[in-house]
Amino acid sequence: MSDFRINFSFGQDEDAQKKKVDTTGDAASAADIEFLCDPALAGRIPAPERAIRFAPDWFKRLEREMDMKDAHGLPGLTAKACLPMTDAFSLGFIIPLPLDVQFHIPEDRVSIQMGWAPDAPFQPVEQHHPGQIGAPEPPFQSTMPLKFINPWRIKVPQGYSVLLTQPFSRPDLPFSCFTGFVDCDRFDTTINLPFTWTGNPGDYLLPAGTPIAQIVPICRDTLLKQGAARASTQVELDEQAAAVKRKYGEESTYARDWRVKK
Image (cartoon, rainbow, N blue to C red; front, side, top):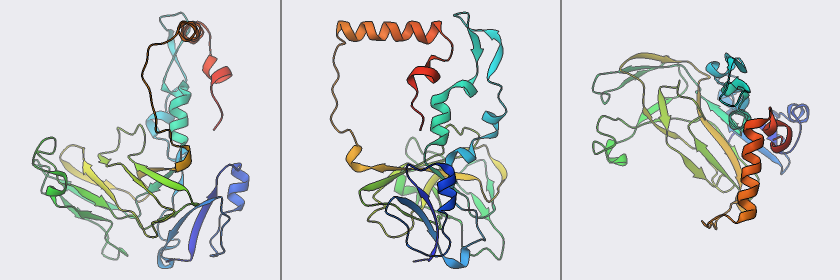
């Protein structure tokens, strides 16, 4: 594979991570996630980055507070004040579209035409066979499955898998990626990204750098596999009632007392 790599360390602050960006091909420590591409593409395509750097414009534009009170008399807050949403935007990394791609989406949403620069180093989007998702049976009556060709191999420490999914909370994107969970500590090649077009018919240009997938490295040993559903005990009901009272009666309780910095 390639000797060009970008790596990020788990559990280190951002300054330390910046110092560990490696384009020399030196071996990274066992605590790194690395994105490897063909040396011929190095510097020609946008690289994966931490997901928070791709937070959408609709979210960035929001003010934290609305000019009104909520039903409990506290300041009315927007999604900008929702720390769980911010944490989700920050989770993992984003793989960006490597090249500009033009789409013509017809009314039938099936006979999709695509194009890119004549000197593109590779074809950035391909078609799947509709039968691979059962089209045209519901829910894919008017669907042509496509796939982004991802030039980045994902290298993680032993014991880690990678969740690849649609970028979180991105209704502004005109496509939807299927979700996959890949054992990247054992899978030594790139992973393409199947998707369907969800935007309206028309002509579109997706510029290079558009976020196409959010990836989250997960240590398999930490997965919770056993669950139980039961009635709450009285102690648990009391805990819940106290939490509800604080949630709706105090400002910034989640940020102050409940949130754990990621």
